[in-house]
Image 1: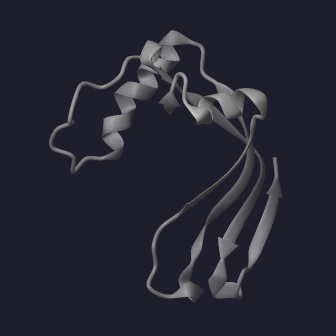
Image 2: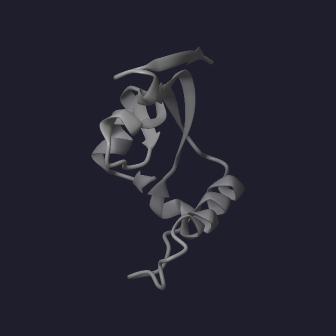
Length: 104
């Protein structure tokens, strides 16, 4: 999710490769677990899908009492679908930097 004319939107239009991680903070480095991915980003152009994404976004933040302004509409933002190509499953409890690689 980004602005229509943002640098991110422009960059992803030119090169759809992205990297991302999904994890949580831990006080001990050897407790790190999570996912690291290489992926391709594709703009969501279906209006119904974009509306669904924007309706779901506040659900990710259940503690948020109110928003500073109205939610954007699909024509005000660019939404990207991320499609993994390689997933690394991180589990440092098996050794520092341990990963199991999954090819999609």
